[in-house]
Length: 54
Image (tube, rainbow, N blue to C red; front, side, top):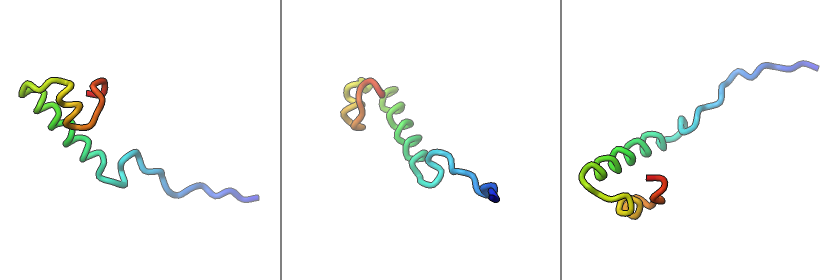
C-alpha cells in the first residue's frame, strides 16, 4: 500500500475569510468607546456581547 504525503497545509483560523479583520476592528471600536467613558454593560448591549466577554 502506498501513502502519499499531503501537499497542502491547513489554513489557520480565519484565514479564508475576513473575520479576523472584522473582529480586530470591532475590538478597536469597543476600546475607543471604553476610553470615552462607556460602561461595560453599555458596551455589552451595543455590541451584543456578554459583560464577561467585554
